[in-house]
Image 1 (tube, rainbow, N blue to C red):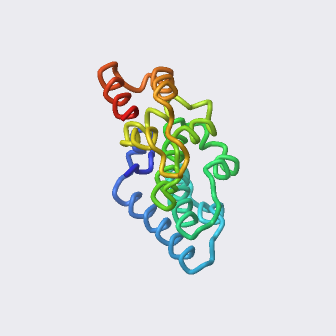
Image 2: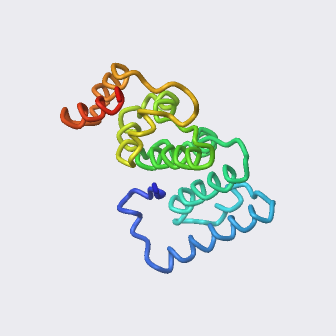
Image 3: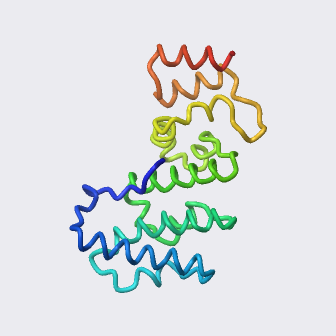
Length: 178
């Protein structure tokens, strides 16, 4: 499972700060479960120096709750509302990867190539992150009823993205040709 990325040395929060942040995230989760769906900006009020860490955790929690509730939500909506999230590539990749993971878990239709196409500026890093999380199978045979990538398409994708070494590429291509 891909976990929220806090970056900045995991923000080096002391236990008291971590507990306060977790309490605010838990309160947000409970309000969502009670069908109140508070605005993130409301939960972020008075966060002070903890705002950045709280924002990251809230976006992860809010996105998960909304997707599990069947709401149509995408990472882009959070990036548009909170442009500072775009400034930290690790945070942005973590959010994209988390959306991918949740959609894959809930619907079985997530395809890494589609996510790479949605975020061309971070395509290679995103494909690497999804591959590292064990998603090469999704590249070979998506579960959404679409045809698998051809061996040549898959090879070109992997070579362009520098995802695997030659020996691993040969193994994956043999499996794809299957």
